[in-house]
Length: 374
Image (cartoon, rainbow, N blue to C red):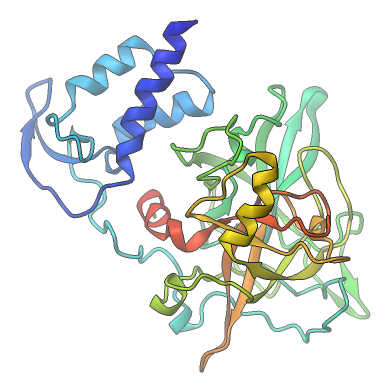
């Protein structure tokens, strides 16, 4: 009814301002219970922020009690951003890249040792060792892979928000665990000649962190990004390694137009499956204006924070997984692979002239840094 619309609108207004946040306010304040706290941006205050993420995950509006509780903690009517009185200041590295992310300079991410065969679309067993498969528990305790993701450190997988709380995921499914180190889903172990990979590992998901501004029903799927915190730390090996994020200034300012990038995966989506073997396809970035002139036929606007790529004849982007990574090689002194995008939509398989739409990772480095913890 109108009430739920109002609630949604109210949440929308709160969340609208969160992203405009910058700089550090360390005004002290008094908590509703009388203790002392600091005014911080809402998403820096774990206890209060979780109220919203929990409602979001259950796909429910905030209850009146929750709203009252949040309002009591608000630090003042600063329209530029929502600040709240928080017991301690949780996250002080705002705006900086979190030191929990591996650094390309030190060579501890984005390393890929495989000898490439270009043009081939099957991957070698140790190629793209950061690929993750998301496993859903369905009624009758059946499990299925229906999305992909990418490992960004020893505790977190980055994926699309639509894989966590999207409209196409049946209510009866639960996002349950992440598989790392996989190559061929139908084979155990994976071998190439005498080289065999260790058995892939399945790790339970401890926390799902969808982007709060992502609206599952929205047409253009803006802010389609989410983090999955794993229940235990990952031991890296030749087949399980994290990808780098595009944190270097020259990458953060790039638009990736015309840049060759690789989308790899098993073609897993909410609606089906394509392959048991990890496949890859080479795509090029398409500029936003061109992309918008195409998608305007469907009344869609591709915005900042979204990237278009592919759409060439015969280049089947449905080899990628929904939520999986689009990666590129930084050809510096020490070459490394980094994650440019996450498969958001437009997976209608190599439709000529229809580029795929990806969440642009450079746009969300701060969000990622703010939402990961040790």
